[in-house]
Image 1 (tube, protein in one colour):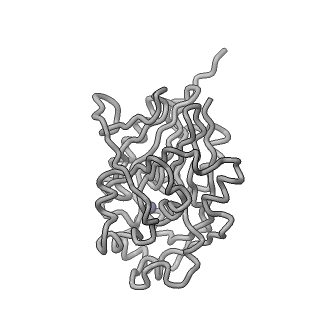
Image 2: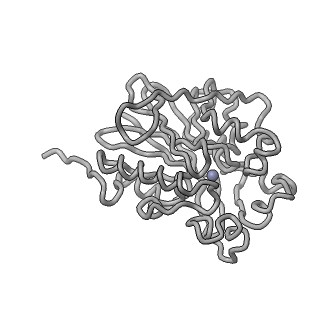
Length: 283
Ligand SMILES: [Zn+2]
């Protein structure tokens, strides 16, 4: 049996124009006076018979330190606010679940934005830290920093391994990387929010849990095919959301974005995507 645990590593507040793209795109995000409520920053632990798998690493309390974020970057300056306490970081959260971080052999990063890669230091001993080749390449150097990555904050002893996607003859996604011998946990490309963004599919008891990272910030944006305000490629983001919706028509999908306050509700209630396939009930 598989269990999925939400690991909340603090909260983030963003602009409303980031949640759902408005005219003006990124510029509108910077100038929008309206903030969202505090949103969760979730990583996910998949407790699997073949060993635990972690999806994302959350944010670090170091974000409170002055100068942690590049001061010259307008996004950090005007458009985001983090609230992470030391005890909310990934390491203490795993310990509270009774998990030794050293037992986690596989970590998947949906993408490398700071609130998904900020807890890397807690799992730098894991054997496989998987990220898409596109994401790894884009995160590098100064151009990576302009894109919102903070690779200079990652631990020095941290080898990111590239995900090897196999082509899929059918199904909506362009590739797949199966992580377990049982074939029930896999990674699929979900580009848009960032060009190398991926999501993780967990199949258990007739349900597919889609750990969506920032494919969209909430389920409503998926249903409306609404891209976020920071993507550089809204058309690609919409295409990906369309693929996820198509997938959810073929099998029951519980959709779990990292920052959707309702993700944990849907997870525990096993609530599938509205309008999609529903769970088969045995008589
Ligand atoms: Zn992101």
